[in-house]
Length: 338
Image (tube, rainbow, N blue to C red):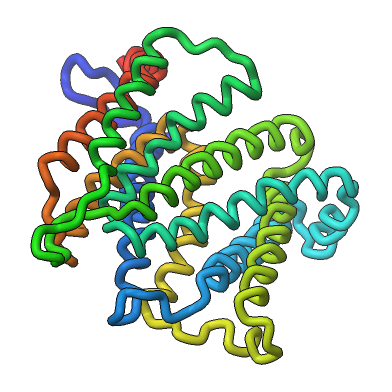
């Protein structure tokens, strides 16, 4: 290993620790940008009339297919054989496969809602409102695992609720234009569905990894999820257009932003796996939270959406709530670094 002499008082610093920190910082920034880009690219991929000129399930389908192929590649590298990788997946029990059907369906619905939200609000408002999944995840977690949450966490969830209500209160820009951040009534309803679906999928998936898939490679578990995800989104695509030519026209209406959206969805799955390798769930949560600010800046630069005072107040309250909810983990990590 390489060692460097630090400044006086800092002692010796291991090169691998510096490399790990730099890699982690890069993944953190890239993750925040990717989260924000999901909403931005959805907005840019729209037709001039503000509608989507392509099949929404096809975007998620192609992203799931990309992750599926990559997961097979990673599993093959892990076991040093493509045939052995196929054999491991094929030998999975029917029970293990069926348990994966529920989160796959929830994630498919969640990702499609993510794009649908952009028809009823600007990307920055969406990024603030989806942080409400912290509230719903806390409630679902308590219902499923029955772990006690102290007064501080319940207070933080209340602050989060107030912040999301402020940022997401239905508003239309003055004069009917779209120069300010906005959201309509349908958008509020969609976000409410989104944060409950997201919470249910996340908690169920964590339970799945720690119970049914606890002895399997993470790549094997992911392959099961992605295969069901492909099936669910393919079914949704064919439901919207059951004609024989719908599969041949899977990418009909795509533009460069839509292709970038598929790549971003696929990258997010791989990126979050690396984040979990270098960090933990708290960092993943803060990556999502940081995307609020990235999205607000990009929305102003690209679309000219000006943040309202209510939106800014809501964003600040959501940030405070996130820190308050995870205070003991942040304090623990800071204490370790010292």
